[in-house]
Structures are given as structure tokens and as C-alpha cells.
Amino acid sequence: MELSKGANECIVQAHMLRMRFGKNDKLCVEHLFYVLATISRYLDTLLDNLEFRAEAEAVRALLEGRVQNMESAVLQIEKDVKESAASLSDAASYIGRASEIAEAAGKDEIDAVCLLKAILETPTAPIKACLTVKDEKHAPEDAKYAARQEQTPKEPPKVSLTKSQAGALLAMLAARQDERRDALRESAKKPKQPKMKRRTKIGIFTYRGGVVSAAVQYFLLGIIVPFAALLALDVWTGAVTAPGSPLIRLLTGAFIVFWVFYLIRGINRLISLSSMALGHFLGIVSNCAMVSGFTAVAAIAYELADIPAWLRAVSCICALIMISIGGFMYRYLKDQGGAHKTKIMFQNVEGTAGMIFFRFLTNQLILPFAVFSIFWIFNIPVPAWLEKTFYILCFFWTWNIFFTMWNCIALRHKNSGRRRRGQLFVRFMGAQHVLLLLPGFALYLHWLFDWFPLATWVIVLYGIYGFVWLILSIGTFKHIKEDC
Image (cartoon, rainbow, N blue to C red; front, side):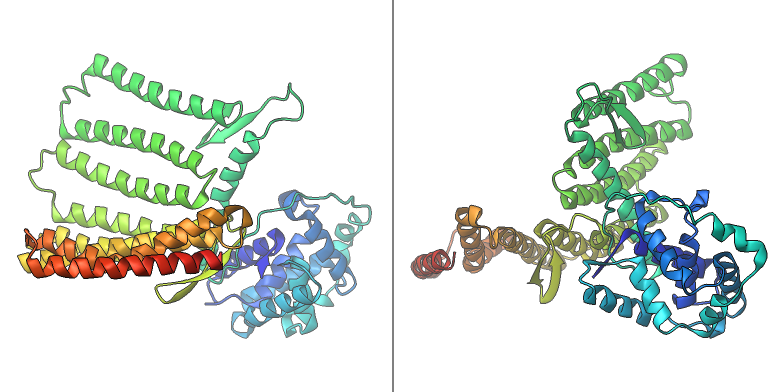
């Protein structure tokens, strides 16, 4: 079960609290209770967040009958968390109990109230102690909540449960990416009032108008402004066409690489409006291309006949980190509506068809890239037999990618009456992909080892297999048609 905006924020802030004190390796229930008690003071300027205001009010309403004084309780639990780290209790069981409470209440997500109810069912000793603390000097803090006004927050985006520090950071990064995409989508909608001024944010700048107008401004400014800057720099100093030192060449080339990267990232964000998974994958590719561009610029600037091993290692490590982080971020992206379950490479996976395919494709890039990096960094010579083996593995790697693609497209068409014709075609093509593996691999081996012209016995086998393939194709088509 997923978390609400308020519950997710509580989990993230509790992890931050744990890391700040640095005395616990895992999230404790006292950390979580401290954050819940803190958000109940929602009238404070720093804590007044409309995205989970309703949850904060509900948390305070539940605590008011149990806590003598809210401000005193917050100070007491903070003191216990700092001084008694060894005696704190793990929060995992409480989060699991909160999931059961939410399910029993018929809720679609775990909210902050469910977390608090789970904690108050079996409070630990530090939590029991803070419930009874009361300091009269903090009484005015509770009095100002008597006349509070309720506000209805907008429905926040759902974020998956994070279980560690790395998960929390990736979740926040993915949430920011979702927010940028939602802002673009909202600006694409027509305004209710014709005279309403519209603003669209792409990248770090905000432009006038909707998505189309903002995209035009984005690319015009992204092309004209850097070009004009380079032209002016060259006219005044000649640093572009006739650089005086390798450092000048390096800075100029790095500026050009970043310029192209900026334009490509704009295209990726526009693509993500229709397919978040595709836009995220293209973003990973563009990040790796930027690292490769910086490496090439450094070699050209310093006129290196061969790129040094340390520079190769740095570029490969940076690209590998970007691919790995990008692969982990898929599970935290919000565009998971209509999620499906399927099995790929003997593993059960869940998500939309696009998310499953591009997550699989990104993860499949890690191992080949790591192997390639080792050979490239250390200039390891590749014998002929190893090169042939590499080409054979590339064939099966590519075949598996396309096989996964057909499966994901078929998963997308599943249980959709409006797409039965498309579903029939996709499933048939997936079956053909399997049936043609053997003859296709044989032809690939003939090309790889230059076995042409085909021997007579090979032609005979192809003829026999062609007859069998025709019968199997007809039977498969009939079976799929009946199933659809």
C-alpha cells in the first residue's frame, strides 16, 4: 500500500532526523513520533504546508486527547531521541501495523493518522513519558489552535514507501521530476478564463504561455543566446576559432557540450509529457552522452593522441553511476497508473508497460557497459575468439530486448476491448519472434563467420523448417485469435 503525501513526508523527515543524530542505523518509532508531533504544530510558518494540512489537523485532533501539552511533548521526545539512542525501537513493525489499520478502514493509502494510531496502540517508554509532560509556559501555543480554520488541500502525488536513506533521497528526486512534469501538463490545459496569464516552467526558467509557446521560447533562447555569446567572445578575443591555450579550448568546448545537452534535455522533458518512462530513459542517455562529450573535449583541448587511463576511468564511473541511479529511480516515479504484474527473465515485475520495459532496458545496460569500461580503461587487447563471442552475446541481448518489448506492448493491450486488433497483432509478432530465433541465429552465424554461400544441407534444413514454421504460425494465429 502506498503512502499519502503527509505520511511520506513524515517518513522522509524521520530518516533525516536519524541521519542528523547519527546514532541509529535504522529508522526508530521515536523518530517518527517526533515528526508527527512536529507537523501537528501546523500553524507555525515553517510547518504550514497546504499539501498535507488536512493530515496535520487530523494528527493534532488525535493527539489532543492523549498529550497534556504539545510543545512540551515535542521538546521531551527530541531530548530522548538525542540522549537515549540505544533504547529506541525499530519503526518497521509500526509501519506494517499502520498498513493494516489503513486497509481495515478502507483507505487507498497509509496516511499520517494511521501511522499515529499504530504508535499510540503500543507506545514505547519514551513516547509514554512525553505524553504526560506539561509546562505552563507552553500553554499559549496550544491556545492558538482553538480557532483554527480548516483548509482543503489539493490531492498530492503518491510516492512509494522508502525503506532507507538512499531510497528516501531517490524518492525525493523522483518526486521533483514528477512535479516538473505535472507543471508542464497543467500548463498544457486551456485556461478557464481567456485573459488568464499563463506561465510554464521548463528547466530553471519560467516562460510565458503554455507548453508550445514555452517550448518555442526555450529552444529559441537556447539556440540564439549561447550562439550570440560564443560569437561575441570570438569577435572580441578570438577564443573560439583561435584559442590561445588548452584551458581556453577546454572551457569553450565544455560550454558547447553543455549547450547541446541543455537543448536535448528540453526535448526529453517534452517527451516525458506523453511517456514518463521514455523521457526518463532518454534523460539517462543524454547524461551519459554529456560525460562522453566532456571527455572528448578534454582530449581535443590538450591534443591528446590517446585518452589517459584515469580520464577514461572517471568518465566510465560517472556514466555507470548515472545509469545505476536512473535505473533505481523508476520505482519512485509517479507515472505508475494502471500498473500490471508480469514476469521478465524469471523475475516478477510490476508497473505500467512503459515503466517495465525502460526499467528493464536501463538495467540491462549496466553489465555490458561495465565490461566495456574495463576493456577500454586498461586497453585490454581483444582476441578474435573473444570478439566473436561478444558478437554472439550481443545477438541474444538484442533478441531479448525486442522480446521484452513485445511482451510489454501485449501487457499494455491486455483487457482492453478497444485494442483487440492491436493486441492480436502484437501477440502474433511476439510468437514470431520466438519461432524465428533459430533460423535468424543461423543466418547471423553465417554472416559472422563468413560461411556464404549456404551449403546444400543448410538450404534443405531451412526448407523443412520453413514448412514447420508455416504450420506453427497458422496454429498460433488461430489460438491467439480465439483467446482475444
